[in-house]
Image (cartoon, rainbow, N blue to C red; front, side, top):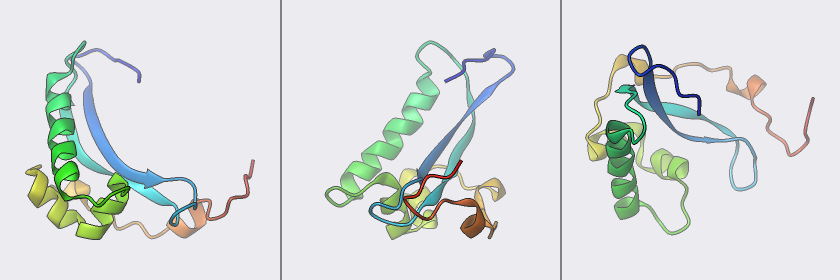
Length: 110
């Protein structure tokens, strides 16, 4: 991770996303928290949000279920409600071009 100047940069947390089609089709990651302060070296605000997400995931996910699969199962509104993270207009993704952009096979293209 590139560490920029703490005064002029912020951190965002994205979850989900998958490039291969081994267990399910490929999917994009989604923004869950943005504008977190960049306070190195421990990043306490970022750690608190990650711990909050993982605590809810641990209590609600099925065995061997990935974070992205868990969120797709419960739905994004329920995710934000359970984690207590604020939902803003920037979290809405209405882009429909994923079929042409994602690699939907195991064949590697260059």
